[in-house]
Amino acid sequence: MSPLQCMRSLLALVLIPPMTFVVCVLAIIDLKVGRRSKPKAQVFPRYWGRIICAIVGAKVRVEGVEHLDPEQTYIFVGNHCSQFDIYAFQGYFPHDFRWIAKKELFRIPLFGWVMRETDYIPIDRSHGRRALKSLNEAAQRIREGISVLIFPEGTRSPDGTLQPFKSGAIMLAIKAGVPVVPLGFNGTHQVLPKGKLLARAGEIVIRVGRPIPTAEYKMRDKQALAAQLHDRVAELLDPAHLPAGF
Image 1 (cartoon, rainbow, N blue to C red):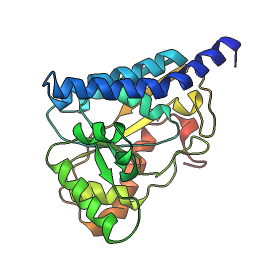
Image 2 (image 1 turned 60 degrees about the vertical axis):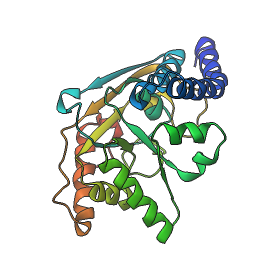
Image 3 (image 1 turned 45 degrees about the horizontal axis):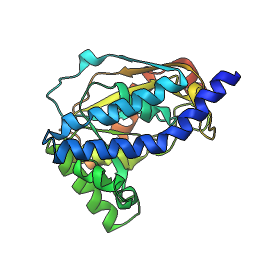
Image 4 (image 1 turned 90 degrees about the horizontal axis):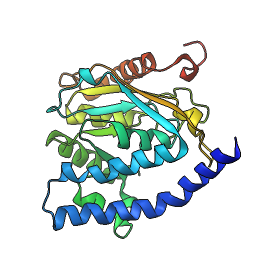
């Protein structure tokens, strides 16, 4: 990594926390004082994502948006191999969406309040009755018209290759009953692999697949839907991101 790129990456690390604070304040002012809609308040996190990508020299392109209906609610399902999956998607994806986040984040002062006010969805990642209740509540919020992005692998891939999909995310898709859209995040692992702090410049391509209806799926079909989604996401990835022998 060149000295200039190192400086750019360090600058991004330093700026992300204060930028996040400023975005939270601006979103609340926009909602409470400007009285604008919650979708319009998303302009602030969108600039947040774009600025972070610009600082490190990550150029983002989205392909396949023509598959989407701007008025439709979706669950977007993608591979997850870098923190820049989040920055790139937040900054450049044109469809209105919210994040599903672990409930602990909603306890953070200001940050958690803003997430709640702008329709982000909490999820209990423990096991048992509380987890099932939070899954049902999240599905209901999605049915009411909130599109979300989920990463069924559960965590970032350590080497950038596509990992098996966990059933919890698939259960949410079946419970919500809205179409799921496969996404392929390409180039994010090269920009910032898991376990690294300093990002590299590079090109990120988010490929959008065709929506898959879920209304006819039942819980007994979750493994079949998981396999179908895994294959659809794999089709959207460059060869370097695929498991050996795929």
